[in-house]
Image 1 (cartoon, one colour):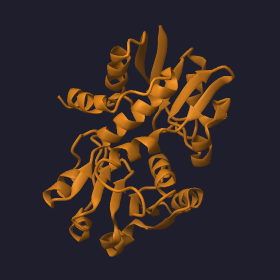
Image 2 (cartoon, helix red, strand yellow):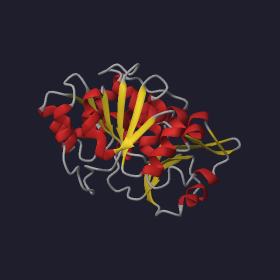
Image 3 (cartoon, one colour):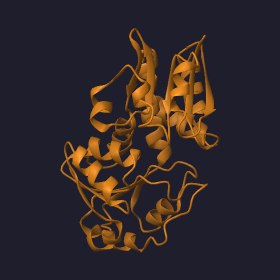
Amino acid sequence: MKHYALIGDPVGHSLSPAIYGFLFEKYGIDADFSLIRLPKGRAGDAVCMGLDGFACTMPHKQDIIPFLSALSPDAAAMGSVNIVNLEEHGYIGYSTDGEGLLSAIRPKHAAVGQNVFIIGSGGAARSAAYSLAKQNSVTLFARNEAAAINVAAAAGAFWRPLSHLMEYVADCDILINATPLGMSCCESFNSLAFLQKLNPSALVCDMVYMPRETDLLKAARALGIDTVEGIEMLIGQGFAAFAIWTGILPSDLLKRDLYIKICK
């Protein structure tokens, strides 16, 4: 039997066991998946646990890098890792966050030549900006100026203070929340009034997946604006991670089945 896990802090809310358990069963893979809470500063413990692979969530997406033997080109460019696989020469780091985001956006909205606004400047914002800036104009809106400048420079994006979002949001085609705002254990947005200025043909995406319908998504839907849930992105990146771990790329037809199973 092979052993996989999610490392992070917190991890109790994670849907990863449901996602990977579903895929292991569907494809007859003899493997298990566990949740391992590792506080910040202990990312390196994960490479000493005999795991065949593991997923990384906050606060370890960057902290894990010094403990790995190599990075995929995307992970190296982003400076962020969310999937680690044990291979011939040791633990190799990958990033599937961007792929998961794009796989959720494409069925609902064009993802080429768009004005993309990303709220945040952390690891999730970094992966979103890097993936989308290849074929779109991307602007980060963030409170942390130093972090936003760093992410924007790495991704080939622009940045503005979060306080300027209301001023520019009418020009946005795709709006992405890449912060913990709205997560069950965190505060929500102080105001969602900026949605009133958003073009009705825009798409609103929230990388938070617990709760499934965040305040941001609920408010957007009330205005008739199409949305992408964090769970849809999580499933997309999970499918990509499963392919790295097993060599099997799951059928897209399974995404709906898995979504229904998770949301019951």
